[in-house]
Amino acid sequence: MSRPPSRPAPAKPDAAKGQLHPRNLHQGRYDFPALINASPELAAFVIINPYGKESIDFANPAAVKVFNRALLKQFYGIAHWDIPADYLCPPIPGRADYLHYLADLLAAGNAGELPRGAKVRALDIGVGANCIYPLLGNREYAWQFLGSDIAASAIASAKAIVQSNPGLSDAIELRQQSNPAHIFQGLLTADERFDLTLCNPPFHASADEASSGSKRKWRNLGKLDPKRKLPVLNFGGQAAELWCQGGEAAFVSRLIKESAQYGQQVLWFSSLISKASNLPGVYSALKKAGALQVKTVEMAQGQKQSRFVAWTFLSSQQQQDWRQSRWK
Image (cartoon, rainbow, N blue to C red; front, side):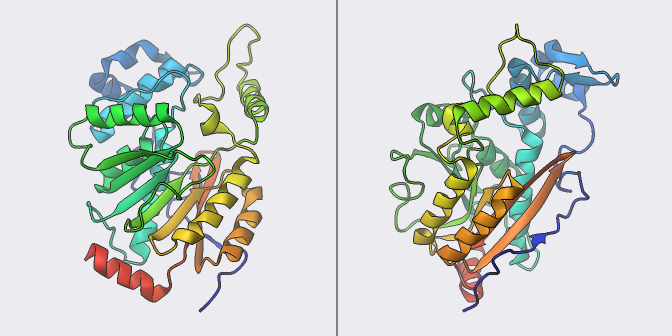
């Protein structure tokens, strides 16, 4: 049985550098008249940027929330979407990219065919109050989702979104992880199977680090105003969404270690890795855990570079048997 290399070569993205995935619906500039037509409330937040183009003030959490609501309604048919104040308001194009590249990952072992429909089940670790990955994944590929979170308030918000949009309750299930020390243990039953897991792990190692990162961003944007109360980050966020002890590296290490115990229940595990400097530690942890295949997928949105690492504990034959029994 072959072991993965300690430093797998990153997979080349299908999209050109700096561009979104080819299937991403958010190519080019936003059509604000169309967005306003779908969500008239957005009109109050539209500004003219320094380049003379219509935009919004991405420093204004209220504007970002309404903008997201308009995107979800126009592009994905999500009529009702809201989150509590100060919760993470996600940049939708980047979130969609993660899902599209995960779909490519599944297709790569399926003769290039994208698996769609309820036969595919995904687990979103840390679904958050916004429930964004299940919403996009269901609308784009009709996948079924289980979303987990340690915060009761996040689960309640996500449930409110799902229940407010007809048809989603049958496709998206939400569960609270009652023990923050665990990720899969105590959440999954022995008979459950998932084709994918995805995760946007807490980025920072402390609240102070998260705050400092935010101030640097505002300073770079020329928006640091001592009189202005700044959000925690550009898109808001609660403590568990933004930081944990040890930061991203520690969380992903724990995710990998625990995933080994559930390796026969999941086809592909995955996690976003925001800091490229964390990759060597991730590869080392995966080798130690006994992952049989590891793939690193680079993504880009303008100048912002990101990536995710995916791994499996199933042999090639087991993967083939999995697809045959679940997707055919």
